[in-house]
Length: 124
Image (cartoon, rainbow, N blue to C red; front, top):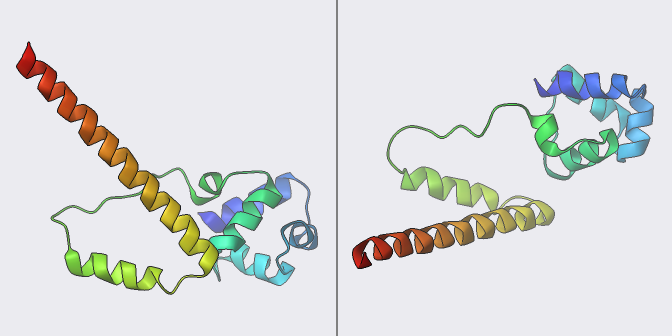
């Protein structure tokens, strides 16, 4: 659970809530809310916490990979996600855009090399 990870990491570094607040630029009472599970850090706050604690965002967010849902593509859900993404702050939108561009580029390369493999099988 994220709240426990934040608290455990803070305590393992012997930081008080105020220490972590100063190092991260976040209010100590906000960090206390994260540790109690009353709030969840998002975007820049998550990044600031990770940097202050000397870990990656992946280290904070857990051991489990992204879970993909079963079933067919849901165009309405996809459109809702895009609409919600448009409401994010500029830094988060920039990060999301980089992730999408990287994903699309890797997919294009995978498809290209897969096509070459199929072509080479036909030539042999």
